[in-house]
Length: 295
Image 1 (tube, rainbow, N blue to C red):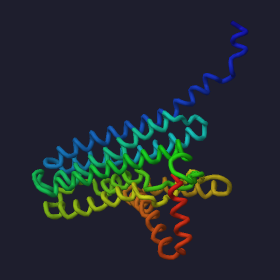
Image 2 (image 1 turned 90 degrees about the horizontal axis):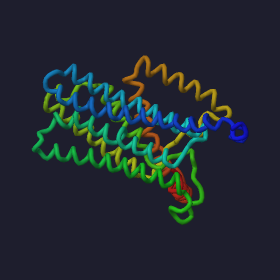
Image 3 (image 1 turned 120 degrees about the horizontal axis):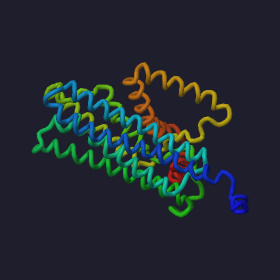
Image 4 (image 1 turned 90 degrees about the vertical axis):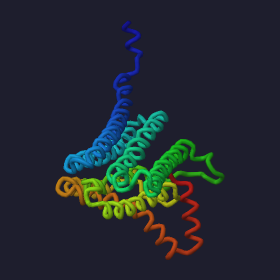
């Protein structure tokens, strides 16, 4: 027995235990998505009888999606830091994301806005359901494309010889779902409490945002990934930015979360328009070619 223990690799048990940590964060992500869906359902039922209670449930759902973004960020960071990233972990994370940032935001938007604003038998209600479904489909496609580019970057397309980790191709689904949740957190009272006409007007505007987010997810517009942030001299500024962001959330979460999510969702589109207008055509073509290789 002593000889067997002597030949056993050191810290093997500890090393195997490290693989559990990213999974726990992913499980927490799923838990927040489940909480968001249940809270949205309860909020919808309370919308017509108790506005304050409905607002509480909707805010809980929005905050659940916001916390899920934190857990989703940490599971990837921890997996890379501990060298415990696995293919099954990538797939598990994507399944969690489709629930938390696809199904949960769609259910929240329906319960908070569309369900109460439009008659179930009307065309507007059906159109709203269609846009929410397309948001979910675009998010699923975005995740599938990301997984393929992450696991098989060299065989997806001819000439695809590198992956630039500084950028994502298309708006990440956590940002899309997070922006919708931030809108609800900014004003959690159900839109039907504003009156039928106002609720319908705001619902149309919200559905337009949903459509734009879906298009951005399946687009080839590049978004900064911040995966290399914190290296070298950037570490000090990253700590300051995180501290400022945390302080802003603690003091003014309704404004801070909406501004951060909105700015990130818009910055890729703004830079894409800037390149299209001010850069030379040849340079723009090179950028678009590189974007097709990024994930």
